[in-house]
Image 1 (cartoon, rainbow, N blue to C red):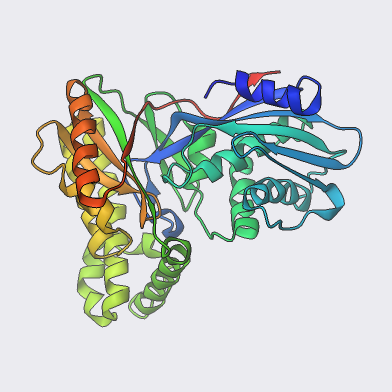
Image 2 (image 1 turned 180 degrees about the horizontal axis):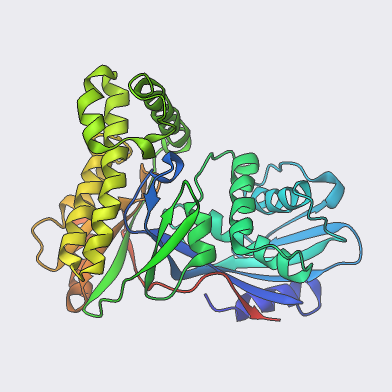
Length: 386
């Protein structure tokens, strides 16, 4: 996202230049879905679609927000930080409130304009980009001396307490730790990471946005989390040292799965195998075997569809439509589920034909326009102008 439109919007809104401009990327997750809140491993990366913040300090305690994309404003004071009816404002209020509640006092208010090109509802974590971008900007202009891991945890708490989504740490971590042409292997239990190269010049990462978000998406995330926790509780009778599904090996689960009710068994089976699959996928990357990596992506998708039951007919159609296409190495749904994007690894010289055919077939099947994006792996939240 270019910063200049947001800077211009800030100047028009506040009749001054911003003190600071920050770019906060969205993210993709290549493999490791719904494993983060089970203390497992994930493999996300920051992408070249982002939210830009232009921000300045004020001399009073007033906070002024301007959403450039929605052309909406919101005001609140530092003493009145509570949930708003405007959902977009809650991420900003939440980050501010979490900073203060964690003993990082803001001496005065601020005003900001923000906007970007991370598609809403596409599973690219625009919300994490907003939360991380604001946290990073406030850390800079008020010299709060927080490191990036602390900012990720603040942003996560804001999503929990103000957006009502009991999410894991992955989205925020990817936005704050991304590197160009690299993916992040994140251990969501110990909050440590390492990088793996993802630089395959003959292939592109293509996102196909279903354009749908089914009503189940709002409730299913927290429901799946509870189902996994119930599975852990039941498995603890065989090993009391189990604290999360991260502690359950595939072989252990195979021995005891028949003792679980069918629903909890299916949920746990997906997570346990997905955690192991992330390790195999990283080995494939280390060996430069992108075709094998793509095979693991397909396995993830059908596990999400059949065991975790968070897919939908639109996502399944797009993935199935790639099977047998020699130009596509891997495809899967990405994100919480019930809509959003599929992520596809496509041979570079076939991308145009791939997008055209997917869009044509999807339109015929659902009468919905398919938006597709080619994305590059990018750097983390950064200062653009100071």
